Amino acid sequence: MNAPEKLATRIRLPSLSGDLAEFRLSAPKDFGTSRGGAFNRVALAAAHVVADPLAPARPWLETTVDWEATLAYRRYLWSLGLGVAEAMDTAQRGMGLDWRNSFELIRRSIEAARAVHGAVLFSGAGTDQLSPSARISLDDVVAAYEEQCAAIEALGGRIVLMASRALAACARSAEDYQRVYGRILAQVERPVIIHWLGEMFDPQLAGYWGTTDLDEAMKVALAVIESNLSKVEGIKISLLDRQKEIEMRSHLPQGVRMYTGDDFNYAELIEGDGSRHSDALLGIFDAIAPAASAALARLAQGDTRGLREILVPTVPLSRRLFAAPTRFYKTGLVFLAWLNGHQAHFVMAGGQQSARSLIDLAETFRLADAAGLLRDPELAAARMKHLLALNGIDG
Image 1 (cartoon, rainbow, N blue to C red):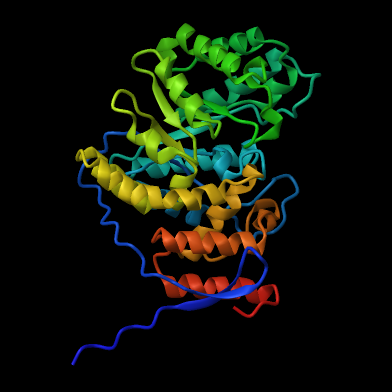
Image 2 (image 1 turned 135 degrees about the horizontal axis):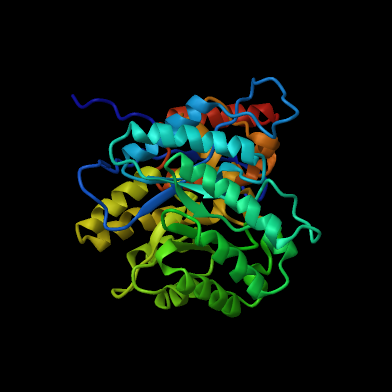
């Protein structure tokens, strides 16, 4: 006699129209991820932090972090062969995580990486000691960058040179950007990844590189790279504009990598056009790590069809997570980490778990299921029902 078929886990979820509708969860996909072979793309996941919901209030700190759960998530990403981009905007940098906490996170992550064979780690250096204002000077910006870069390199860390709100506030021309970046890049010990973060991710970075014209901004960024070639490992652009990324990577000097930060179009940008491709530094890799690892392994074997079959179904989920207002995408990442049992609660620094509506979270739930990314459907459904019940909804 055949074993009875297991009934699908069911839950009632709010729909986009606001009604409750029954939803049947699918079986999770077996991505078959392993660290058996090397990828032929550099793949960095910008990782979220796990807040400590029970820590006592400390007025002099912007947030409190559950260090063990946070580091456990980094070890999970490394176990899948992915690198980690630490203390980036995904970690609520500048939206709950200040420089003091960021440095502690970087220090702990560098130490943890040393215990993991082959672990790759880059850490964000910025200027968030400063409050953005037209009253600060370029020298103030340089000093802030110098402090953070020196602190990270003193630990043996590699740097992602983050876009600066303070520089955007006080710079008056493209030449100001070239001057500041030139001074910092002249001092770093090892080549860095420059991070160009679009205003959809951070409105305070509007007009970065001294202009709101993206073509002109690209020319300024390329001039910075060309003037400091030995100090630039690559550039990450997060503009959610596929064509601008393709255009810019076609102009990059030999040996300088384009790291896609396009959470809408990453599948095709990573695959490339047969001539050039993008490597990856992506917030969405935090949420789709098993799929990303499996897809990159297929690509390294020359199986582009396999890459598409695994990665393309994750794109609708990513587009939902990074929908406007894009800067609140971290809420969706932490929500999925909670659903998948990587952390015990759905609480974020600054209360940002409330930055997305229940209807939005329900759609995120559906799309994660469609991509096969809810690794334990019963746990995910139980946690979603709990969240709904807290809001007076019987799921």
